[in-house]
Amino acid sequence: MREQIDQAALEELRRDFKGQILLPSDPAYNDARQIYNGMIDRRPAIIAQCNEVEDVVQAVLFGRKHDLEIAVRSGGHSVEGWGLTDGGIVIDMRKMNSVRVDPVARIAYVGGGATWRDVDSACQPHDLATTGGTISTTGVAGITLGGGWGYLARKLGLACDNLISVELVTADGSIVVTSEEDNPELFWALHGGGGNFGVATSFTFRLHHLPATTLALLVFSPTEGPNVIRRFRDVIERSAPDELSGEISYMTGPPEDPVPPELVNQLCLFLELFYVGPEDEMRKFINPLMELEPEGVMISELPYADIQSAFDMEPGLRNYWTAQPLEVLSDEAVELFCKRAYDMIVPSNSIQVLSSWGGAIARQDDKWPMGNRKSAWLVYSFGQWTDPADDKRGIAWANALCSDMIPHATEGTYLNLITNEGRERIIAGYGRQDKYKRLARVKAKYDPHNVFHMNHNIRPD
Image 1 (cartoon, rainbow, N blue to C red):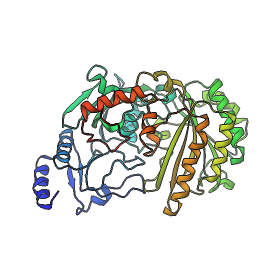
Image 2 (image 1 turned 90 degrees about the vertical axis):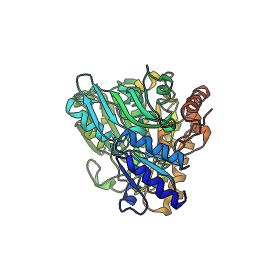
Image 3 (image 1 turned 45 degrees about the horizontal axis):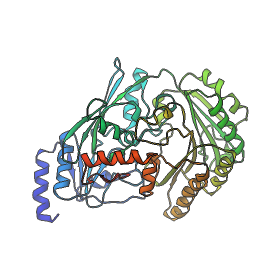
C-alpha cells in the first residue's frame, strides 16, 4: 500500500474495530510480533489484535481489499512461523481466549485465541478434560485443526475427535458455524485440514470425567536405551490399557528431580508415562519398567492441568521439528533410534522422542481426513537450541533421525510436528490421495483464491 492509501484505509479500519491495531511505529509492536520459534523474524505491516468476531471479519476483508498476505496467530507455536508475515496483516486472536464450561452437559465453549492452559484451568475444578497438546502454552486452534494428539489421545481420541462445532470466518468475511449437522463437509475438513478454510473464532468441545491422573518419570543412562525401549514397547503393545500412554526421549538432563547429579547437562534417557487413573493402578502396569532399575524415579498423582504444564518450554529458542509415524517398532528401528541420539546438541532443550499411539487414536481412522492414525508409534525430533551457529547441525540431526526410520515407517506423517517439507509430505499427512482431493474441493468452495495459505497448504481444486 502507498502511504496516503495506508492512512485513509487505516482510519477506516480503526473506526469500528473493537480491538487494537498495531503498526511498526507503535511501542507494543515488537512484543506483539514475537512467536515461539526464535528463528523467525518477520515484520508485518499491521497486527490486528481482535476482541470479537466482527474484528476478525474486518481484518480479513481489509487484508483482501489491500492485497495483504494474511497470517492468523493464536498460540504462535507453528515451527514455520505461520502466525507471522512480512509486510502483511496478522490477525492476532490472543484476546479472544475465553473459556466457558458447562459441567452438567460436559461441554466447553472455547475462544479461537485460547491456549490449552486456558482450557485445562477452566475444566480442572469440575474434574473434566478433553485431549489437548503436551505443552500448555500452545494454541487450541492450531493443534485441534491439525489433528490434536496429546496425553489423553489413547483414551479419548485426538482433540479434533472431541469437537462438537467450530465457528469460522471464511475468506469472503462470512461467519460460518460447522458441525456434523451444519456444513458437515467443512466440519469434516477441519479434522486435520488445518487453517486452510478460514479463521476459527470459537470451538465447542465434548468433555470427559477425569477424577485422577498420574505422571511417572523414569530416568536412565543413555546406554540403556535399547533395553528400555524394547521393554517399553512390550508393555504398550501387549498389556497396556488405553488409559496408559508414554514417550521415551533422549534429552539433556535438567538440574532437577528425578535426574541424578551425574546426568545433569548430559545426554540421558527419559521415560515419561501418563495414566488416566490413580497411582496404585498405574504401578501395576509399569512394574516391568520399574524392574529395569531406573537411576531416577518420580511417580505422582497430579491434577491433569498440572501435568499438561509440567514440560512447558520457554519461547524464543531456535526451533526445528519433523516427525515420522512407524508401522512397526522393530528391534532394528530401536537400534537406529538410539544411535542417532548421540548426534543431538547437548546441552540444549532438544529432545528425540518415541511416542506411543494406538488406542482411541486408531479407531476413527477412516472417518476424518487426518491420516496415519493406525500407526502404533510416532518418532519425532523436537530441536531447540540458542546459538545460530548450531542451526546446521541441529537441522541435520532432526532430519537424519526421520530418514533412519523410513524403512520401518508408514508413508505418512503428522503435520502438526513437521516443517514445510513440500506438497507430497502434506498429501502424505492425510494418508490417501482421495482424502486430499476431497479437502481441495472444500478449499475451493470456502477459499478459492487461497487467501489462507500460511499453513500446510491445500491448494483449491
